[in-house]
Length: 160
Ligand SMILES: CC(C)(COP(=O)(O)OP(=O)(O)OC[C@H]1O[C@@H](n2cnc3c(N)ncnc32)[C@H](O)[C@@H]1OP(=O)(O)O)[C@@H](O)C(=O)NCCC(=O)NCCS
Image (cartoon, rainbow, N blue to C red; front, side, top):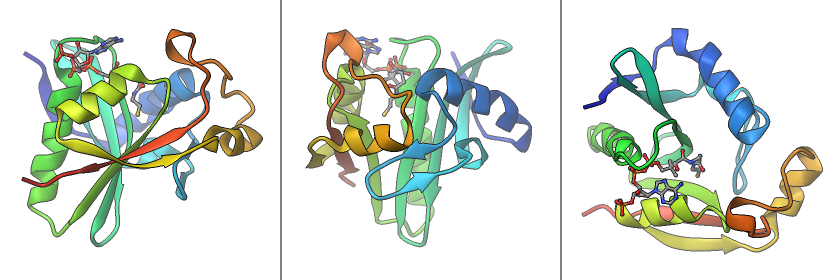
């Protein structure tokens, strides 16, 4: 059973490498927000035995939070759901009324995951990846399952 803990400053180095491996850079562009050096954001880590099993990064201001990055190294074991639960439990103790997450049209595992964990699709940004590619040319044109990587989809958590 993985253990979830709050990210420590000592995690920043490997998270930066993980961001570069997963998204080509530690610079994350979302819908209207950009995160330079995303490894410095607050977050939760999943660890199993002595191995890192997943990481979730988030950013919040007074009443709005964005789940900025989620990467699980051993997929299909419920680790992403555990990390999302840790974030939601954390936000319940704060005054945050809005929690959003953005993914892309091709990311079927993420589209499934967010709908399974209480988020609803609230906005679609057609062709948003073109603007991202202007700043991050390494972003591929073809994504998961051979699907053209074109649009951003914003989800908002529906508080029960
Ligand atoms: C999306 C991601 C975070 C899911 O993590 P996970 O720990 O495997 O997810 P969970 O096990 O908690 O559960 C999510 C569901 O998606 C399924 N799933 C996970 N990875 C999958 C994959 N590659 N293909 C198909 N289904 C997948 C799981 O089986 C589970 O479904 P179930 O409950 O019906 O069995 C993970 O695939 C990942 O790190 N992807 C790469 C980075 C990424 O795209 N992050 C999201 C960016 S917004």
